[in-house]
Amino acid sequence: MRTLTHIKDPARRKRIARETMDLYAPLASRIGMENVKRELEELAFAELNPDGRASVLARFGYLREKGEQLVPQIEAELVKTLKEGGLEAEVSGREKTPYSIWRKMQQKNVSFEQLADIMAFRIIVDDVAECYQALGLLHGRYQVLPQRFKDYISVPKPNGYRSLHSGVIGPLGQRIEIQIRTEEMQDQADRGVAAHWIYKQGGPATDAPQYAWLRSLVEILDKAPNAEEFLEHTKLEMFQDQVFCFTPKGKLIALPRGATPIDFAYAVHSQVGDTCVGAKINGRMLPLRTQLSNGDQIEIVTSKAQTPSPTWERFAVTGKAKAAIRRFIRTRQREQYLQLGKSLLDKTFHEEGYEVTDKGLDGIRANFKQASTDDLVAAVGAGLVGAREVLTAVYPGLKQPRKGGADVVPISRARNKAGKAADAGRAKKETGQIAIRGLIPGMAVHFARCCHPLPGDRIVGIITTGKGVTIHTIDCATLESFSEAPERWIDVGWDSVGEGAGAYTGRLKITVANQPGSLSSLSTVIARHEGNISNLRIVNRSMDFFDMVIDVEVADVKHLADITAALRATPAINAVERARN
Image 1: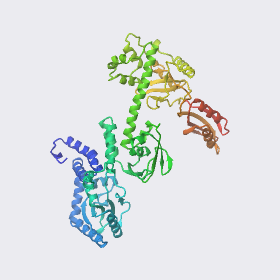
Image 2 (image 1 turned 30 degrees about the vertical axis):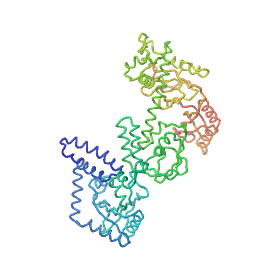
Image 3 (image 1 turned 180 degrees about the vertical axis):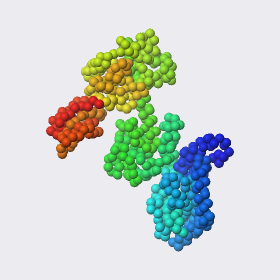
Image 4 (image 1 turned 60 degrees about the vertical axis):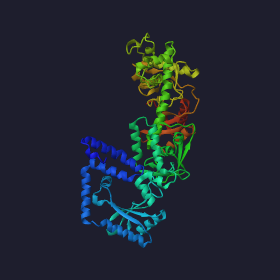
């Protein structure tokens, strides 16, 4: 950066300066190298916004002309105040850098003259007790500026930085920032984690707080599949404000503002995050999407049977959590695609009297630009390659069904075929039917939101490019749009209906009387039958009745039918039917 001015191409200079400002300066700050950070910011600022820097420097020059001895005079007054309180200290003052001044002007939308801390004064004392003694003396002598006090000794920054910060209307009526610290703290502030080699015999403890962020950065690098995702997660780690939370044993964990218990769990340990099932915040069980606040005490509830949910990524904030969740999704999604792809190929090959073999797939994988047979099977499961296409590639003599004309199966016949397969599956699982139990919703299998299929429903699968299989009920109106694509229809079954735990969403249309207690009666009936309301929406209001659409978590179609029957028997409820859209 010091030689940046020698590069002739202005576009290249700006690119390097932007990269430095976005990545390397924040990185230097996070490992505590403040001197390096300030110099990198100033060099990049001079290239990216020379007019802004010149404006700040011009105003600094004007202030210096008005009072060249301002800083020495304030230093002398501060030393005098501390001596009167019986404290010997080293006091040094400096002007803030042009970039830090410009950034505050932009963030606070204020003018140069309105800034409260253009000048900063550093007070070096012998020990921590004298830090607080100096703070008391100065607060007793000068008026404190509201919301300007920060105690980084009690709660250090993630990079290990420790100091007391305060803003006061100091000597000569000037608004100044005061930083109080020991000599060791000063050395750490200047040189970052490297300074610990001086103060820790035998080298620093690598489990110290200032190393936690570096370890998380290494984990992100390990889990990110490419440079772009690594850069995204690293920026998430570096650019957000902090909240400070505690484990039940009192360990402090710093997280970005807006973080949730999921981020906290992954900050404790990756395994804790992977097996997280719930969180107690200050003793209360709260949802995993709850945003954390400063001072919260978090207890993570785990289960060995739990795995990361794809929905966690929606509210996770930290780069470490997002990288871990995405890595799990990629790994598990591939496993699901392999399982589904193998089932699709087995079914398609068996219909023609053939067996799927690795040798046969290996001979034609290059035709589909796949690096291995597993990649080919996974592509079939993801809907990127058709199972019939693979079959005809292995056995070129087979007739390929035509799209359109006599080979198009009428939707009534396709529905009938799938319905019969579903009915047969209740008595005995058909060899040609693909089981979906065990496949994780949202990965290789998606349940259609138009009809909300439940275990026990007659269902059909539609292959969706890049998403795997979408499951519809056999009477879903959406299937009409696939009537001319029979190659995308597959027979699927629930496989052992009634076995295993799992919550599925059933949708009900309900008309209730507009009277006190109606909603209470509705929710009580659903709760008594072990259903759980996941969403409620009022679609029509009148003087006498309300029409509602309610999503209820149930085990299967029989469970939903039981709840429906109980609701129909409730006096406050006028009508109940299962919603199909």
